[in-house]
Length: 362
Image (cartoon, rainbow, N blue to C red):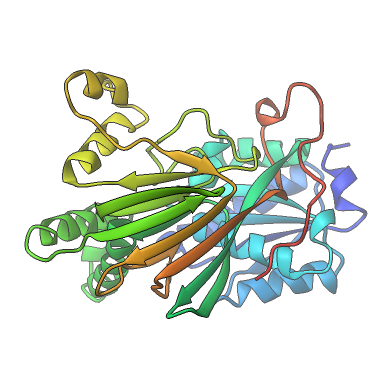
């Protein structure tokens, strides 16, 4: 019997996915995945995702009303985040495990745990779920303030950023909507190509319009001040944007996030080249050539005070956020239980998946 049985608790798993995603290819992937789950003797049901955040309620209902204890997402990092938030919206978060079937663009979460994406990876990813090996994943609890008033609360599992990356996300979403109106063009100009184009637009804009901002960051009580930042990233899992690793030592269950400041265009270029997973030139090589960069800082509690007019854009896990002048982030250690390949489980045999210290606030 598959190892996942100990988490199913006698109830079927629930697969959440969007059948209309990937220009309709996702519908075929869903059918294939369900057949593979049947072959692996994993009882399951299917629930389509819904727009405007309603997937969170569907996940909560599957857990609280239908008794599900294993939920599986299929999609990108945004779908991962919505399904995970649904787990924490339920009354049984500490008893649930989450399976991963990454099929999105960046797939930071899946790649950070050694999972490939797309149709060719479905069979292996189902076998990982069947084995039922669990690790804990840290969760970020985010509070946004503006003019000393709280304006937004959220959770994030992969990354949060302020500045160039978040502004590029706004541009990408706008461009993707425009391109979608032109027959045929959406098949060519899509996914990472759209995002790369958005970054280049925003970077070019920085030569004409001042998009930089000042930041005072208090990380675990220590003050760090930065002037004229292009971007700042708070990162949980190892891989960012599908292809970049800023710190090889980071782990998703170490109770720490890393803050990556981008201090200017030179630093941006150094990080983009030196942190690229398959780049033949590393950060150390570039430093030897005189290309210095601002190193990451790690911590469990962050207070970020932003000084800029207008306020820079913000995002978490690929979703646009209201811009604030103060952000507070607390790391909740190992709060989410993820089903991962065996090689990503602590070799000591210690269960590093919990317990959940306190359910993160929505």
